[in-house]
Image 1: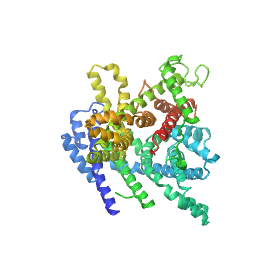
Image 2: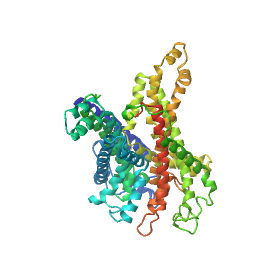
Image 3: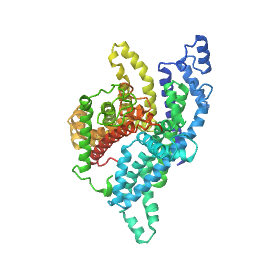
Image 4: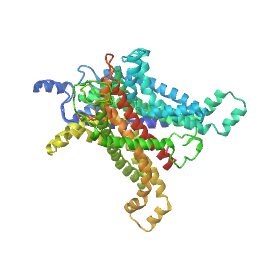
Length: 305
Length: 297
């Protein structure tokens, strides 16, 4: 277990290094200076700027010095948001994106699993059909279609929830649900299919015969083994929620990591783009690892290798 | 994994027939619709933000352009990006998967480790970086090659490429596992024994058996690419004016939301069109996968 953990963590180092390399060279080699856009800058000032942002010297020197800075935990200054470090920006925006993504994750799993179990228990009855139709709709409606419509209905027409902003629970409700809903549909479908395989099994019948409470049978005996495909889906789900929040942040005017990332790409902010991409990748690798550990814990037959 | 472990029924049910019919309808409408329309997609008129009426079935946008016409053209672009992106992913994915599966051993392990690695990276993030940064060099190259007529299409071309580069992973996995099975089949071993070249075996014995499964995953890749393209266009990183995809139209619609005047049609129609397209493609692809690849998910 510990050996597995160590191996995976050391395996992540070259991957992250690769991500840094790719993004750094992509952003650095693309034409367009991070300082362009305003007036033409006199060469002397440009030189000063380049020195300040450590963008002078050969490309290789820039790259090696950047990697060494990153290894020391310094993601450098943003060129778009002058005088703010990338560390600062990520430090302020990552919690926002994680709160949004985390709430959506909880909603997607909560609603998805509940609906899936319900549908499986009522197999081929009205409830099952209803869940299936809702799933079909949920999968076909992306969150960036859902979100503006939800704003239109809930915020502007019925005036129930604020159309944007960040900080209170009421402001979190709409963006998190819109982000979560399409994925809740996928989770529900997975749960339903996997419960339908487990429920007819002999040991479930034995548990029923012993007179165990229905809830225990369903959630302990049934759901635990049935949740393996859901756990396997959880890592890509986390990835989709993180990247999906780019659009949700845009629609609801939330200043999360995504909005800064898009702005950074457009303005050639080398270090901001490289830094945010690094954080995204590290998070994803972490989620994948967590999913593997969870499935090993849920089913002892899963081998960690 | 089918419910109850039942084998899926070998006939197409009503839902699938409906999905196929609506896909055919959408395709016909996207291809021929703009030709039949009284308006052109870029035609500006005085009637800004008009409600849906007999003149403008889906209303007009802020510049007075007919939404129905723009929607049909947008669907055309979205389908185009979807099919070409899926095609790029098909070429990369099936070549890669076939290579890994057929080579086996160390090469296979190395190639598939790369796929696993890419699965664990935020690919859409990388595509955003790629598209935003390769655009200027591509434009420069087009001007250098005297191909200025292609300039408005540079972003769309990058979308084909970028999305194709992202969406090939599943295809590679599926093709590889199928090739592994085929490689052990007796007819392939027989071909090896009589001394056919590996290329000949791939071409004549393995490829024909891959076509079905590849076709199925192609129908599932198209909606994934359309979705990704809409996502990028919504952010302003995809298809750009004067062309419009469903994603750009949605972004325009989202912009038009304000408490003063609610132009709901700018949101509801493009959203509905996108959802409908995704539904018919996904429903069809899912069913085909159940029929042809019972092992898949």
